[in-house]
Amino acid sequence: MRTFARAFVLSAALGLTAGALHAAPAQSSAASINPADYPALDDKELGHIRRFVQLSKLLPGDWSGMSDDLYAVAERTQQFQLAYMADALALVQHQYTPAYRELYRKTMDALIQKMTLPDIWESWLKSSRGGTAYSDPDSPDLTAGWLDPVARYNAMLKGYMLQAGALYDMLYRDGKYDRADAFTFKYSPGTWGNGPVVFRYSLADVARIIHQEYVDNNYEGVLCEPNRIFPTCQQPPILGLLSFDQVHGTHYAADVMPKFAAAWVRRGYTNPVSKQNVRFVYARQGTFEEPGSPVLDGWAGAWMHAWNPTLMQTIYGPQRDLYVPAFLSGAYARFVPDVNKGMLSLAFGHVAFMAAEAGDQDTRHKMLDYAERNFNPVWQDGAYYYPRSDDYKQDAAGNSHGVASWTGNVLLPLARLDKGGQFLTLYKTPWTRAELDAPQIVDIDDLVVNVSQAYYDPHKRALIVTLKPGPVKTQNVSFAVTGLGASAYTVVKDGQVQGQIQKLHVSAAPGIAWQPDGKLTVSTTLDGPHTFVLAAN
Image 1 (spheres, one colour):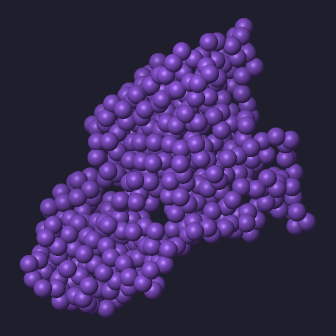
Image 2 (cartoon, rainbow, N blue to C red; image 1 turned 180 degrees about the horizontal axis):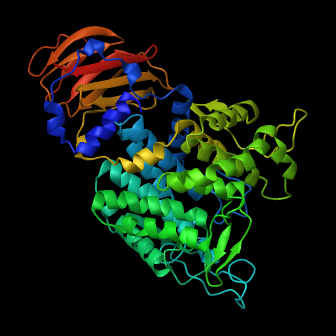
C-alpha cells in the first residue's frame, strides 16, 4: 500500500479528530513534500469524469449518448448508467481528490436525482405484473401490478439508488437524503390512470425496506421482479446498507452480509463446477435459470469483491479464464444475436470492471488496450469516452468494434479508475469527522480547470493541489482553501518555495492571501499544469 493510503487508513482506524490532526507536528519541510507520492488523475481519467459531469447536466428527458439497443434489460440501462457514474465519482472523491468536493457533490446528486425521473421508473408498472413466461411458470396470467417503484421488489432500481445515495451520504453528511422527500417519484398521467400520484422516500426508508425484504426472503435476496431473484442485483443493495450503517449506526448490513453469504452457498448460487453464477432464481419454485453469463458474472463480481472478497477469490479465476480469451481475440463477436447486440459489449465492460476491482492488472490492462484499439474513443469538450457503436461483426483482423453506451460511458472508465480493490478500500474506510473537516479547495470554475490532484496529508499537515487547463481556455484562475487550522503556511508552487502566508499578516507569497471570511485565496496562471503545496509551519 502506498504512503498516502497507509496514512488514510491509519487515521481512520485510530479515529483521530480533525483538531488532533491539525495539532500534530509537521514531520518535514514543505519543499521536501513530493506531490508524486499522492494520488492523482491522469488526462483520460479526468476526461471520464468530465463525461459524467456532462451527462448529469442533460435536461430531464434528454438521454443523449445514453441509449442502447438492450431491450431485454429491464427498464433499459439508463438507470444503471446513472448509478454507476455516481459510484465512480464516489470512488474518485474518496481516493483520488478528497480535498476537492464541490464538483463531485453536485454531480453525484444530479445523477441520483435523475433516477427518480418518470423515464426511469414508470415502466415498473409493467415489470410488476410478472407473467407466465417471464416471472412465474405456475402463474395463470399477468397480475394487476403496482406503480410504486420502491415499496416492494424492484431491486434493480432501489438497490442501486440506495448504494449511490448512501455513498453520497457517507461522503458529505449534509442531511439531504435524510429528508422525507429525498427520493420523490411523480406520476402525472395524461391518458391513463386516475390522476397524479407522488411517492416519497428518504434514504432511511429505502434502507429499511430493503433490509426487511432480505429478512422476509430468508436472506436469499431482494426480488427484482415478482418471483425472480437475480444474485447479480443483490450486491449494490448490500453495499448500500453497509454505507448507511456506517453513517447512521444501524446494523442492517451486519445482519444481511453473513446470512446472505450463507444463503448463497446453501442455495448454490455459484455452480461448483464452472464457477459461473446462476442467472436468476424462481423464488416460489426454488429453481434456477442457468447457465450464468459474462454479463451477469462480471456485473456481480466487481461489487461482490467490495464486500465478500473471500468468495470472489474462489470464483474470479475460472470466470476470467472462461470469458476473457474470447474478448481479447474478438471471438465473442461471432455470437452476435439478431437483437440486443449490446449484451456483448456489456459482457466486455462488466468483466473488465470485475478484473480491475479484483486486482488482476494484466487482464485489466489488456482489456483497456483492446478498447483503445477497437472501440474508437473520442475527446469531446474535454470528455473522454467510447461512443456507442452497433458494429459488432469481426473485421479482417478478427476484432469487434461494437460498444454499448453503458460500457462506453462508465464500465470501461471504472476499469481505468479502479486500480485494484479500491471499492473494497472505500467500504472498509468510510470518512470520519477527520476527513470531513480536513482542508479542501473550493470556488473552482470547473469549465476552465481540471483538478487532477487534491489531497490533504494530516501527518505532514500539508495540502497538495494540482490544476490543469480545462476545455474552456483562460490565462488566469483562482481557487480558495477552507478548513486550514494552522496560522502560518509555507507555499510551494511547482517545486519552488514561494514564501510564507500567515493570518493577519501581509502575504510573502505572491497571489495568495487570507480573506476576512477565513478562506485562503490562490491566484495563478493556467498555461499548463501547476502544483501547489501548502504546508503548515
